[in-house]
Length: 265
Ligand SMILES: NC(=O)c1ccc[n+]([C@@H]2O[C@H](COP(=O)([O-])OP(=O)(O)OC[C@H]3O[C@@H](n4cnc5c(N)ncnc54)[C@H](OP(=O)(O)O)[C@@H]3O)[C@@H](O)[C@H]2O)c1
Image (cartoon, rainbow, N blue to C red):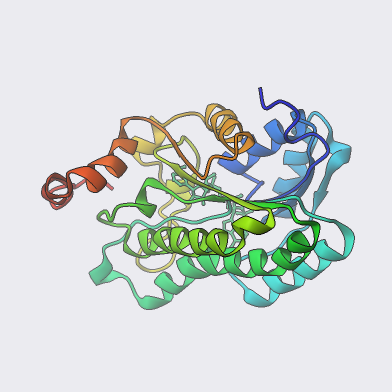
C-alpha cells in the first residue's frame, strides 16, 4: 500500500501508547519500519509493543513531553542510539473549556505538549537530518489547526502554531532534503475527549458524541501513511467535518455565521 517507503526507515513516533499513535505503530511495524516510541505511560507502550507484528523492532523511550527538561533529555538519548529518518509528532492533549473560564496555566500546558515539545524535538533532530540530506517531519494537527471553535481556544492555538512553525521550517530547508506532512484529522474514535483538559486542568473523563462516532484510528492510520508515502504536505482525514477547513478558506462569512452558534463540545 505504501510501496517500500517505510521499509527499514527509523520512525520516532510520539503518543504511541493510545488511539491514533497506537494504530500508526501497528501499521508502521507492518510496513517494515523500525520504531522508537514515546509517551508518559511506559506500561501502555509495552502493551502496544506486544501488539506489533515485529515487536523486536520497537524501542521504548518514555517521557513527559509537557516537561521541557524531559523532552531535551529524551532527544539526546534517542540521538545517541538511533539515526531518525521520520519524526512523527502525534502526542497531544485536547481541551473542553471556555476561554473565559480557563486559567493561562492550562493554555500553557496545551502549548507545551502540543507545540513546544514538537519544536524542541524537531530542532534537536534537524542538524543530523541536514547532514544526511534527508528527513521527514510528520505532525498531527487538527481541523482545529485551521479554524477556531468553542471550547478549544488553547488547543486551537497550539494546533494553529504547528502550521506556522513547520511550514516555515520546510521553506527554510526544502532544498536540503527535508520534507513535512501536516495531518489534520476531523473526528477520530479515540480517548482524545476523555483525556481533554477542563478549566481546572483535570481531564473531562467522558467521550464526546462526535468523537465516539468518528473514523476508526486504524482506517485513519492507513490513509495518513499513504499520504506520507506520497510526501503530501497536507493531509486532511475524517468525515464531513473536514469541510470546515474549506468553508473557512473559501466562504469565510458562512464559517463565522455557523461557528458563533456551534454549541456542541
Ligand atoms: N481523536 C481525534 O478526534 C483527533 C482529532 C484531531 C487531532 N487529534 C490529534 O491526534 C493526536 C493523537 O490523539 P488521540 O486522538 O490518539 O488521543 P489519545 O488516545 O488521548 O492519545 C494521546 C497520546 O498522546 C500522549 N500524550 C499526551 N500527553 C502527553 C505528554 N505530556 N507526554 C507524552 N505523551 C503524551 C498519550 O500518551 P500518555 O498518556 O501515555 O502520555 C497518548 O499516547 C493528538 O495530537 C490530537 O490532538 C485527534
